[in-house]
Image (cartoon, rainbow, N blue to C red; front, side):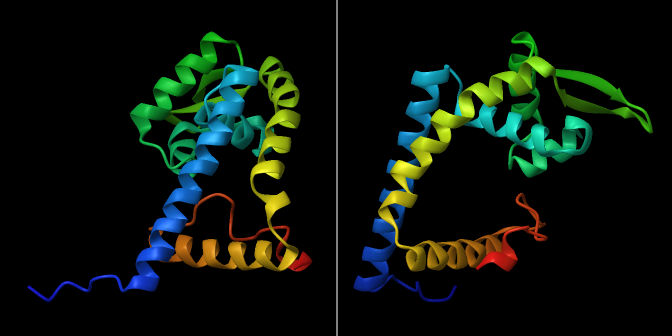
Length: 166
């Protein structure tokens, strides 16, 4: 077994700073969505992905992959969203074993009602604290980490419409 490659002092400080910032950011965003909308961030992300999909629907397996969720966890979340009338499941026309999740008109209306508060919370917690140069550096670092960690392309897709605006 090879020797452990311990983090040096600078790497340790970077790691801990990164962890702390992620935890604080995600906690702030989660709290805002729960307090203002009674909606966990994971459910909000499902609504967003469906709203951006062609026909506002996706195969459940594709939705699970794009949401970086297990199929069982996604199925549970979609069941809760169905109870609220925001999502409906329907059979996949070309695969009897597959199912589609579809954003309903009520779900789209809910997303549109919740999105302004969420966007403002993201802006206040993250973008207001960063210069344009820091934002670009953070995106570059994040893209590098995603490429290093992901087994397959994840959302957002690699054909990102913002790539030409850097």
